[in-house]
Image 1 (cartoon, rainbow, N blue to C red):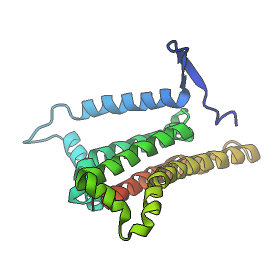
Image 2 (image 1 turned 90 degrees about the vertical axis):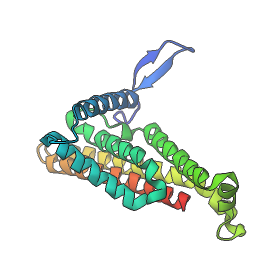
Image 3 (image 1 turned 180 degrees about the horizontal axis):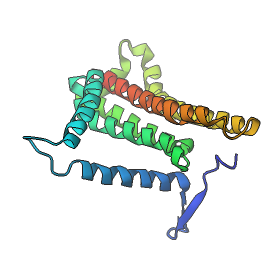
Length: 220
């Protein structure tokens, strides 16, 4: 329980003091590193005779873009940069435990914020595509009697995204702590590699996969 507590790293001395949790600081570090890395990778790009770094980058980003393009379709293409950004952030956040940091996704507040961002984008996508009248009308499809269920889904979807990501990351953390308590420290290393790398990347994939499907559903 001590490991799971959201420790306050420092307090901003305004409005009576605003506590800044460890998960927020780690998120800032992740965003700063990813931003600097992105700036470094896209410097000196060439249309003709590109270098190996640019070719690898184009293949990687092109593959990820195509994956999401197949999911959301032409109407949802404008939201692919968000999906890629969130996928990279969650993937790095889940892997950062390998270098001694506490993953921000172990904080329910962090996963709730990610889920809230996604659901706002999903509803915006539907509103942008259908307009106000069409967006409101969509809650009564295919029949008006299920409108309350469709409205309830607005709250169910972010809760599902939030709890699925948080629950799986928390579950792997608890299992690893139990293994460390029961067996010698050297034995849990393969389990740690599984939970921190494989399971962490799977959770990032599931989160953005479901968000992409919800966006496609909203713009259909």
